[in-house]
Image 1 (spheres, rainbow, N blue to C red):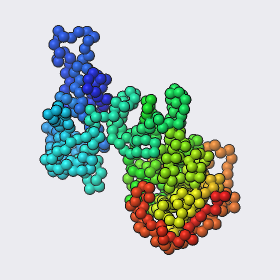
Image 2: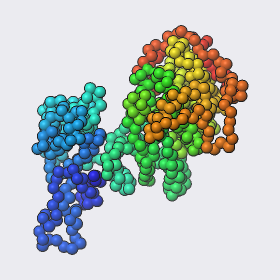
Image 3: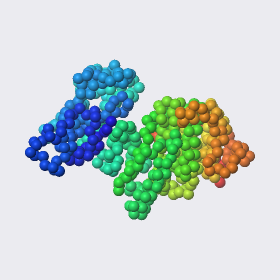
Image 4: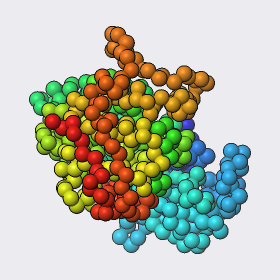
Length: 546
């Protein structure tokens, strides 16, 4: 089904293609113009007859179809009645779990002009069970203005997650004009999904299929790549080609890249299971087998990046997305990798140093000025594993005995028995080897995959089944071999492992109270857990920083 391109107020509408779901009829030029007025080459029948679009609806789920609302009608009625402009009468709709909650006349969208000739779009709720805009019920017989990128949902279930919804795009108030021409022909840019250290992320729709994607928008003024505009373009495209060449089930797919003189647009696979951060906050902490299954995915994804010469530098739960709402059925998706190539390593690190919870000590020691290796990602994964198993971060501003950055630089943390009593010693040992202050002695991704805690065939089969659903059985890679390896290496032992000194550090057995185990704090804190009453004598201080 074709989609309309960018609309405009005059002749540029000729560039658009008409959607098959539009209810406006299209007349030929001979029906709309006197014959004597037609002069060869002066009039385009497509320009003269194509009705202008004033609003578009893009389906969020698979049940609805896209709709262009054009100037042949100022009002569109939606419902189960066959007389509606958009009737929900198909067999597919009838099988939907929310079908019986829909009214014969459920809602209408219409335009109204004010005295000063301004036109506004409204939505009126005609239903008994409710029409929702951005999660808020309108109420039967009531109307409200409909704004660009509002989400319209019908009969929302108790879970508050609608499976019958649209995104409304106001054709007169869209970001399409800012897009490169090639991107404008292929995608419709929609609502804001989030903001990061390097730019905005917006929802977008592929025109011909209405498939949802995410678009990361980075201002080129942040770029560290010098030289002429042509040089910058070539260098950016080189980095983009590397990112697009990555294919791994646990890494967000880069689908397309466009740019103007002022912006870079990176089109990404859209993942809708939420952030790992939010899942930890809602659960408090994960069962050890679930944490291990998710952590295995993180390890193989980051090892894949490292094998391809990419260091992430900003691994944290907010940059680890889940493919499904249930963590037990979810694939981890690593995002925001390779951004330092565009915005500059020093610039990115200085930004991240403002919230250093997941940053390696060498980044803080060097004040974000570089001089570190891919080992920074191993430290970050150690912090993430601590959070998944403990439900709170190992380093916190709530620990008053020393500043947060000093805690990180010294590797100052503990495993209080009250919160860690049910966690295996192997899991704690994995964390200790990752949270080794000296990056040269810190465990690598390959070593982490070989760690005894990861030698769990059942959990690895579980993770592999999620990562590779088309493969019925896959033996667990107990001893993965890097493609670049030239010879086999024996499994590490306590005597020859460079991190063996960390195994002599005893885990904390403090009975001090940390507070509530169900974190409810902000993303900077993860939880409101109080750490003031932890016995400092039991905290681990890494002795590998010399």
